[in-house]
Image (cartoon, rainbow, N blue to C red; front, side, top):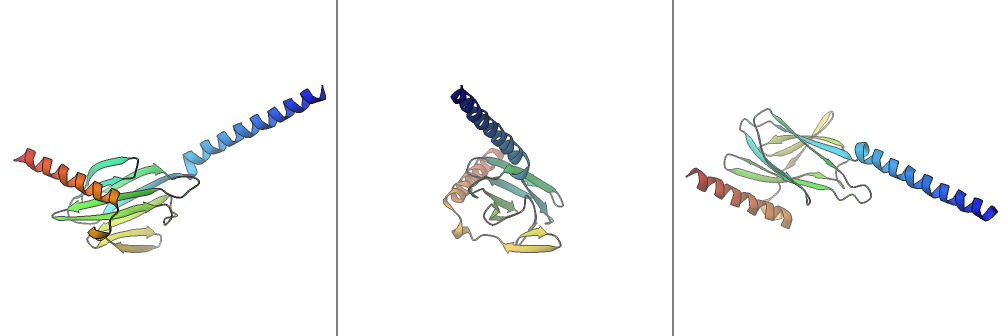
Length: 161
């Protein structure tokens, strides 16, 4: 009878631990890991923004002067590998930037200001400005994104003719 009691106690501890861990993961994934990146267009021109990570393409969005765009996503829990990169296009210019790199950013709500010379991260009360990436220093995934955008632009131009 004592072996049965031990087995029931061990089973109770295992089930309790499992349920507790499931609840903790649910709480963590809905609050601690939720992240948002907000971009403010400080230019006098509309900016077309295209953001994606390796699993999700947020599509093309047009951000008028003075407008905000917020993108929400969930960071990874154990290994900090979340990367969100974007292209920014206005007039005849196109620029690229890793808008969120989990290893680099500690913010869960990141606020960026779009400028002609780069992006500025607002970490109150300071702005930390970074230049646009050089077109030659982009990753293979970003190069594929560029090719996709160029093909999309060609398709749009052909449709407009």
